[in-house]
Image 1 (tube, rainbow, N blue to C red):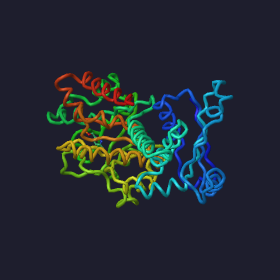
Image 2: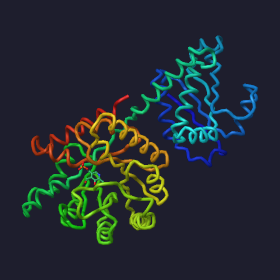
Image 3: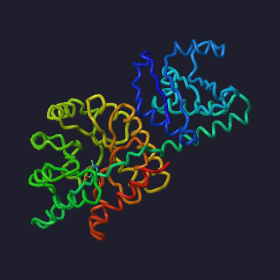
Image 4: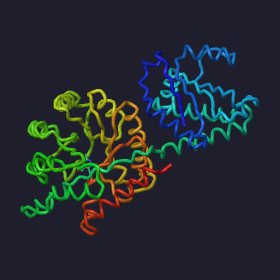
Length: 398
Ligand code: PXP
């Protein structure tokens, strides 16, 4: 399956994620069962599109998408040669960007729809032929876009496990057991791709000794969750975890409550990101699924955002849960489109995780409470394996 993607230099003013478009293009070929065909995809500006629109459709001005079926598909002489070429889809990115704004979509959502529309034309559908065909094409587009939302590449969503609760039990007795360091090793053996610990200023669970030992023993990836407080920043700079996740930290909260107000603290958070970057530590910002926070995270140089899934998990009706899910899906997509890497977490359990794990823009889920509490009854190894299985299956959807 080959997709030849060409982006004209004149489209440089738009930030285009070519990997994402290629991935979606490949899925569209697969979903239409033409994965053994080749497709050419050309992204141009309005000026070039106006020329093509005048030449081929005798219409003035630019249009959003044009499809040109391959000659081997339309010429009976060539058809017999068995060439598997679908043809060309040409899209004006300027028009796509205007439409995205008009329909409150991201640029890549609009481009995805235009590729879908263009591909259906190449496959013989035509909304201009009759009302009935217009309806059929519209329905097929909706169906494909919905299937795409669940389509993932072979890369599985990763499971990072937060072991703070193991330390909470230890601190309740003030002795040395259970040890979060041993817990981390069991999680890794059972399939975790990373370990998360939150070193709080009040040291209510994870201790300095833990982070130092974990830095030496974690084989996968150590994600240090922390508030942007001077003392903790200095510990992180010396420790050099694989990444840090900045969270808002309040003394009286039981667990991290809301996401960071990034747009209101750009200077402080930007300075912390800068310090971490100089030490080679990528930073993730824990935020609510909110466009303003995503744009601010991008603007101050975060590598990742972790999208807060708490409201989705705490929803008390299906309707509310669907709404919260859509907000997360939209936020993850927007962040990914902007070039951020996207994680998600908080409150996820054995019922709520699959839907989030199926979102193709999310790279990693951070889960603590549900796994550690299940471990009390089933053992930690079993609890991790069950969650791992849920994520693996959800990643394969589509
Ligand atoms: N992500 C962040 C930023 C968190 O603060 C927490 C809680 O420590 C989690 C994920 C994990 O949440 P839970 O323990 O509810 O799975």
